Amino acid sequence: MSQNVLIVEDDPRIARLVTKNLEAAGLSCSAVGDGDAALREIAREKPSLIVLDLMIPGADGYEVCRRVRRESQVPVLMLTARSSEADKLLGFELGADDYLTKPFSPRELVARVRALLRRSGAGEGETIARGDLLIDPARRLVERSGERCELTTLEFDLLHFLAQRPGRVFSRDDLLHHVWGEDRVVDARSIDSLISRLRRRIEPDPAHPRYVQTVWGAGYRFAEES
Image 1 (cartoon, rainbow, N blue to C red):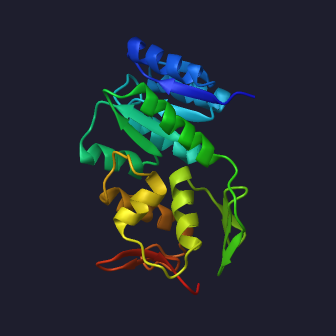
Image 2 (image 1 turned 180 degrees about the horizontal axis):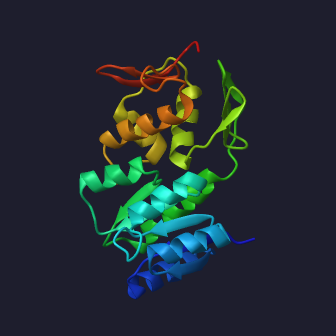
């Protein structure tokens, strides 16, 4: 069955451009022009991925992302003319998985959508158990004390990468490369935001993290003994 992408974009020309290129890549697409319609469509159709503009009528893109994250971990790619560092950090803080600024390359858009869909599918590797935390890459499932932790694609990828290498310290630039890839639009501060979100989801006490630890002046590591 074809994976379905919901495009939330109020400019018909851009919506058609995105639709044309994603459909040419073998994806099924639908498009809506405002945030309220997007929320209704998401609840009804449960898309495989959302391409989300920020400056849309009704609920804006930030509000759509915030409300989606209350119920779902569907990958969200923000596609917007808002290019400031603050906008990007806010997008990732609310749970976006990627952020692409306008004007954009259709080829790059397709590549990023494909990467998000691939990463949100079944993973590989052995289940990792540390303390009361269980990480199952085959099902992209994380549990703490038997209770499921709902993680976004980026949050899971970061946790799994670190947990596979307990005790090893990674700089922010290392993590950007391994989690986002080489040609991302984000900077090192985005890692801090992602770490903060991840801790809120998996740590018993996020203010005193047990699993994902800060090594001051160097970066982050997963605890050797949990």
